[in-house]
Length: 465
Image 1: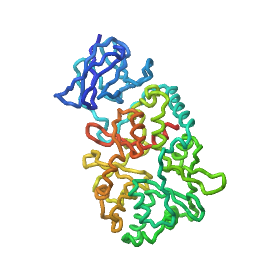
Image 2 (image 1 turned 45 degrees about the vertical axis):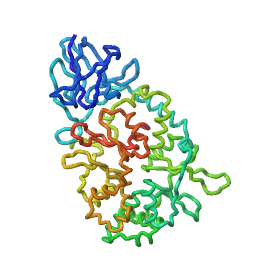
Image 3 (image 1 turned 180 degrees about the vertical axis):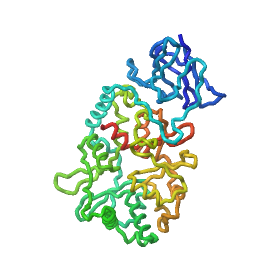
Image 4 (image 1 turned 135 degrees about the vertical axis):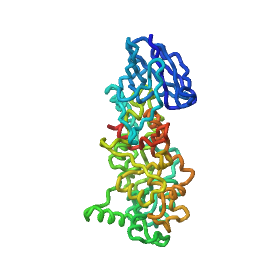
């Protein structure tokens, strides 16, 4: 038998160790170590040579250490950490790019963070989940989404708002702010149809255009400008930027009540939009009826509520997000892929708005001078500037992000949630299924640095692959 020390370095109030050697039946209490620190827990086990699986129960939540090798438990189909104990009394953690969190006898490793000295997230190992299990999980979710229609997303009581295209911009964005909505459908009375969608990006266009002309935005100017004129001006603005007069309006992306949830999700992801109006076409040729505004959060909520099996029977959902590299993560200078952008509170509002447009992102984490997470600044937060007509005297090159965030409705603080790299994909899906939550921020529990950001589109792009 070889004495092995197991460490849990991610905090918690109460931590237990379970392993395959005991048949998963024995809960081994883990004690605080390293000078009484409450962030690292330790337990010793006598194990025979061979391959062993283990996992942690942290505050009644099953967790794995994503720095180490993970494998599927054949008996239950769940994901656990695994090690190899040799006859020489050595532990082979299989993943050799990290200092192991599992050590022999009295060797106690120092607390680790997952970030390199350059501030970029280190490359994590790919969990050894069989391709058949990945395909099985995706197939199950695909079958679920294919067996339900957009009609199943309709709530029992539903208020759907549409704005007339001739409504003035001032009132339109004020309605958007008061209702806490990031997008609203537009009604064209002459053609008796839903003709488009009003988004926070439209308000960003207004602010940038006014700033470009060095004019002060006044209520009178906005009252004189209708939504229809705004959309036309935005199109001309895009034509100037692209150097092409051939750019035209994109047709409205819509869906019918009988379309499958899978087709709806693919459409939202493909066209990089946030919501789709559900329109019921009348047989008598009258104007279509607006039933609902569907979004990925609603589809994800439906999935989480109606899964035919417990999550543990869908192995892919038990993988840690740190191993899946889902979303956008901090990467080193030699790596390719999307880079995680952050801003400080003192950054000018104008710079942030240009960043949204040029980098084609919907939000950016706000960090302090030490890189610790403070808040999120999102496109949808821009409409808060309509509160009290602050936008009337806005100067993008003078107002900071901190000042803009101070105007965000206090009730909207749950527009994001936090998680850690070791949290499962299923947990992230549950967090994002709340319609108020639009993104999940991955935080290093030690230094509070932002390691990644995961959006609804990231989750569905991954699941629909």
